[in-house]
Image 1 (cartoon, rainbow, N blue to C red):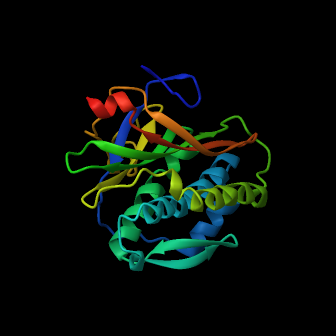
Image 2 (cartoon, rainbow, N blue to C red):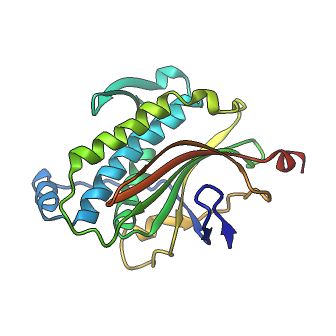
Length: 236
């Protein structure tokens, strides 16, 4: 059990990392439209949030300069200029990972989604953390436009947060890790089988946390913050 330094409450999350499984999954647009009309409020929130996470995680990777700038192309999302990965495998990895979280976000099982950057020894150097809470008791109609406007402000803030990064070595690597409030039961869904426990090294000391942006509404609460190892951790 550990204390979440940003929110101040006790958590005991399970860290799980998605591995890349190359498979073709197709759905008719008609079925997608039917699902959208029949979605619960939690389903609507999760769909908008997962779409946002795909854009935001791509922005994090771009800002940290892991790949040449030519690996991305400028696009527009919700009237905000964003970066889109040009390489199919990079784009697929981000898309498949966050899409695989959709049913668990909807059920309130996902506590945080983190983009973690490692050095050559697989020691975490920096973490961009999205802490989320979907209100499972919310039963009113979701105003998606208002929700999207709030999430858009995160993208604007994120695009101006490059100075908060400590700088990464050229041989660093990164991954997307999700921390669950409860363990998805394998065998109950195809999505659960895509997730495996991670062997990511953990910091021994509480990290230094830099808040970037937060929102609190009745249907959704979201925090975005940056974690770095403490000075004492760096000396270990």
